[in-house]
Length: 516
Ligand code: XMP
Image 1 (cartoon, rainbow, N blue to C red):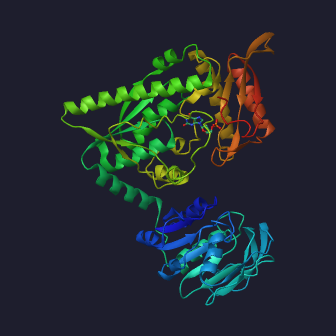
Image 2 (image 1 turned 180 degrees about the vertical axis):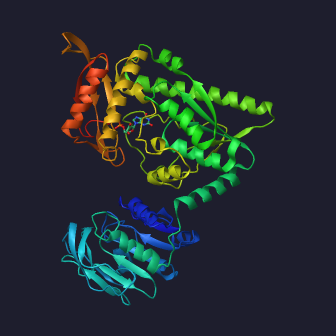
Image 3 (image 1 turned 135 degrees about the vertical axis):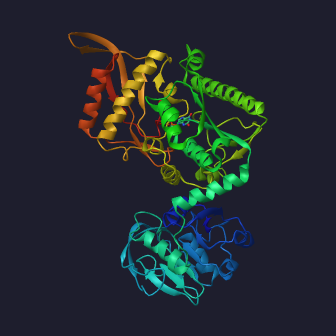
């Protein structure tokens, strides 16, 4: 792989993604690994990321010199560039000047693998210190007002550095520079494609599972569907998928799993229809956290019952089930290294996820993939666009989009309103702009309206369209007024019991995306 050494900024994941966009496999590793540990991973090339500190700050990670003597091509970016310069005998000055944002960058030479075809442009900068003298044996390739040495190369040793952030979309030509490094500098081939991912994962899954049996919980979401489809491709009928229908899904979603998923993959599916069970358990409950806990608890119980039924069935055929598929993604793997001590704002319950004390060995075929790669793999496996293109949807489903008690009538009403809002958003071609659009029923609120010839006393529906990168922060989406008008008209006309549609114009923070 290409190793992206994370020096603690938020850019390492972005770099890894850009490398993969160049069809070269990359992995993120912490800067605390020794050179020996890095080299043990057999890197085809190494990219050193930016970092938040000055190379002179107390406790700042040191970029070790021996990293550059192993014959592995290296590209240093920002902090990584300064660390490389220092390690190789150059000078880094604490100028006290900061360059931040889009910066005029002068290219001094294109006669090198890194900047071939790259001319003067605006690059994205974020640095305080700057390299004041390039190390011996290095050529200076670019400069800016605040950074006279903004890019360097030692072609012979295949060592390169740039002060700016080519991985950021605001850096014009940034992708070209990364590709130049990978293809021209390191001599790598762009052969990490969706097809090759599928082949590789299928082989690994076969190796892990052998001829044992395996089960996989489907939530209706993208990750579990793609993970299951991969395992199905690898081991066919050794896989049984389990779908617990809790009755809190949106219109058409249960059918999507029961019909479309099975049609596309040919997977064996065990459906547990548990709508009644969930409604009964939730009767009389309005408190959001209590709802979440009940849904989580019932889900686990329902899943375990389904599991026991499947295990018993397998046992009657003299087989046992040893493996459980999970749709863990790469960011979870990277982030579980850090991020401790974050406050529990809401008790997130991942319906794909299961209790930890299960006696299964885990199969995690998406562990190395980012979300967009998971979608591409899903499409490659023939899953329909409605499944692979799905927006995120919370495990507890519509249960946390009814403010107030959950009843089957209210679920029915919310499903209709939600289907209208989604259909209009799609018809307006705006699915790509909106990260997620919860539609919320304020079941405890009623307001007076006039509908037809008379007074109505109905519930409001809230539209909550948001844009976001990772759901940690979000902004409300500025949807066109005529689209909002169409949604409002249709919902108030077509959904009995609703006489008002309102728009949520709160960012996160202070609001969360969901209402409960
Ligand atoms: P909040 O409301 O916390 O939501 O801003 C952030 C993102 O997480 C989703 N969400 C959940 N997803 N189980 C899930 O799988 C949950 O319990 C859950 N609660 C919220 C929410 O839809 C948004 O994308």
